[in-house]
Image (cartoon, rainbow, N blue to C red):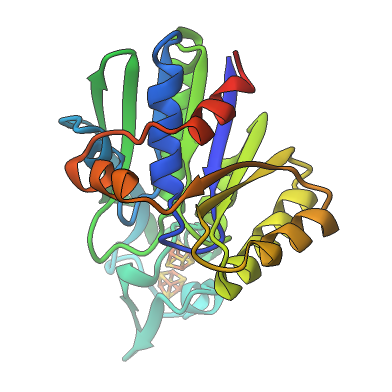
Amino acid sequence: MKRIAVTGGKGGTGKSTVATALAFELNKKHKVLLVDADADCPNDHLLLGIERKKIETVFQRIPKWDYNKCIGCGKCAKACNYNAIAMINKKPFFMPKQCNGCGACVYSCPVNAISWSKKETGVLFNGKKHNITLLSGELKTTEPFTELITNALNKKIEKMKKKHEFVIVDTAAGIHCNVINALEKADLVFAVTEPTPLGAHDLELILNVLEKLELDSKIVLNRAGIGKSSLIESIAEKYKKEIIARIPYSKKIMESYSKGIPVTHKSIEKIAGLFQ
Ligand code: SF4
Ligand code: SF4
């Protein structure tokens, strides 16, 4: 099994277009697990026209208080680095939206007045089309911790990877914890960018992170031809990274995108050719 990650420093660079197109190309000869780890806004199912079914609810542990035991010492509020507990009239007042379930409050209470409860934080879905199995994670609206979803996806990948020759992980944009989680264990990462100053800036950020994580990577230049390719070429040279493919900005590609049909183009065949 090969694990491939498709990422991009900024949103809207065409990460999902590349991930779904690559999954479609590889699925012609191989069994592919496509993982949509962009939990704030998963859209691979739309791009591939796959109907998703809920398979799992993702929970986050949160503390709960027994006020009969509480002696109002305030140690739990002091222990919380996330300002999720405020002492009001010597009683802890809990703000669950700010809690990440670290447990510091539970362990700091001298009278064991705090135990564990849980709240729903998101959902995992799956779906299938041709040789592609889709695994998709979605954070519940109003919940802040996307990394809980990427952790749940990683656990599912571990269980499902044996049945697939390729696992393609479409990460969220940016370089937050959830992206780092999704990049975990990748054999190769494709950093998707576009030839604009913002694209170049964010590409450099992501290449820096990939270098620190010691992950092998290649650049995919999307919308080639609309801006200055030299911006990306100089970064590729600086980081000694190959621009493996240049996807043109074309009407045909935009039409595929808008109709939910995977993009087919010789640039995508070239990427897939790395694994044939
Ligand atoms: S579990 Fe951690 S973040 Fe949540 S309230 Fe307790 S100390 Fe704060
Ligand atoms: S640490 Fe325990 S006893 Fe102290 S305020 Fe918090 S819940 Fe109450």
